Length: 78
Image (cartoon, rainbow, N blue to C red):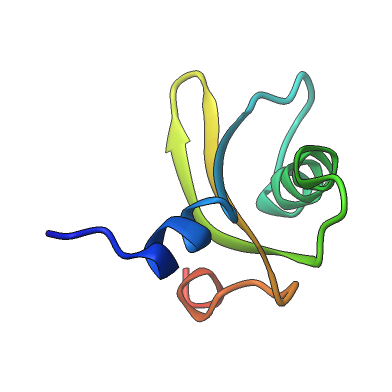
């Protein structure tokens, strides 16, 4: 698969974060923490979009995108 210039630009907008919370957690808390951390990483972010949340024994892996600021349709259906 060839990587185009557009593909590279989009990759700069994606980050995978590991979120480990020291307290009782629900997905709302995980999403809030992931968005706050993404704002720090992207520095001048547009709105942060949560693309995926994966539960692991060490915490949650959250994929975020510097984008339109909503939860993706895939996340709404989970």
